[in-house]
Length: 500
Ligand SMILES: [Zn+2]
Image (cartoon, rainbow, N blue to C red; front, side, top):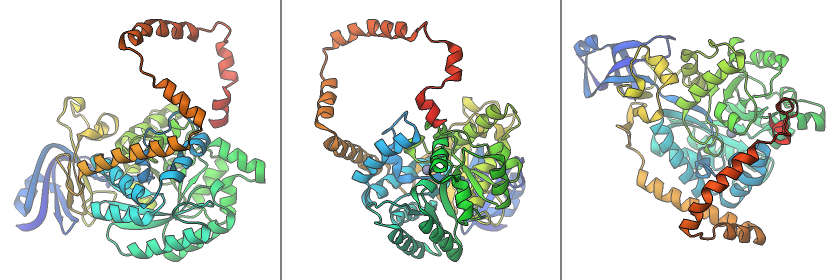
């Protein structure tokens, strides 16, 4: 009988490696933060004794989910700017708010909020891109979650750094600060082709080689971005990045909604990893990443939520479902992104993109005990013909009950063990007020007056009496006999034209 730290008996285990396999009535033995064995429960009883033993007969265990692209601190801007295309969303709403509010405290509190949400969604590792990556690292390490800190690089000055040289210098310091940390990694994170010029990009490539760390970058997010680059320079952004040496096996290219066949061949040749963020792309009407095509030519594709300001949840279970459904709908092929592939994108492929697949991303002996337990006993997931199918197509993140990272039990019956949820709630509320106050103070005087007029108190009875007629008027206005339906297809509205 071998004594181990933790022994988890479960109804099902989906290890991801080997692929398409579901083990029934199995147990996972954990020692010193690592998986030592995965074996049938009947054998585990005879061979292992756990100092702590969990019995989860109606749960499925999967590898901890990996969020391969996010901006964690932007959780404080969730719901702050909706229904806008990317450039207007950035320029009119997000960048001014960030300019006014982002400092080390914003990043600490926003990241903590995001980590709480991610742990409760079964996510055990996130790939971040934001200002103050040192703060992100400290908060993630204290919470016990795996993180890859994006050493942000952007042409314009922010509260984090004044110029390219300072971004790179500070990034290097952050890399040194966390070098050798068991949970924290770093990646150079040039924001996007349209916000980083050639010289800093070349410096980023050099630094990534020297430090042997990935590059994490938004690329070809929208058609508008590609067209603007072609109009200005005659070159597509991807061609420019190829010329500058950015396209290599270390690159995590995020979004990639605009890809021609020759570009897909180039990405495959250069072993570039692609991070698909389907819900952010849908919400910002950015376009569609051809993931099933990419994975068919052998390109590693992972999944990201993007920030909570453009999604608006940090829910990789949800992204799996959206990615699988979207791929089928676009290709008109129901076999596109099958359930097993969606789960691999959300786990092992994320680990591969981050260069940590030797450590995490699947449930295998020798790997870290990064495990997510999902309760399948509820009516919404019955009957269980195939737990893999339920995970991708039916289950919600509220059914995630337990999460272990490197063997540490960080979510226990949906309660966070390393974070104070009341403190997070209180600080989040304070930030909401502060963000609104800062932006209201900056709004032009007449706009403020309008806002005050809008909030005028209407007597309850009067307001209620107005509802039916207002609703009727709206219905009538919707029917416009002068609009020819065929014309709607031929001539998209200016908004749609600029952004699809
Ligand atoms: Zn992003």
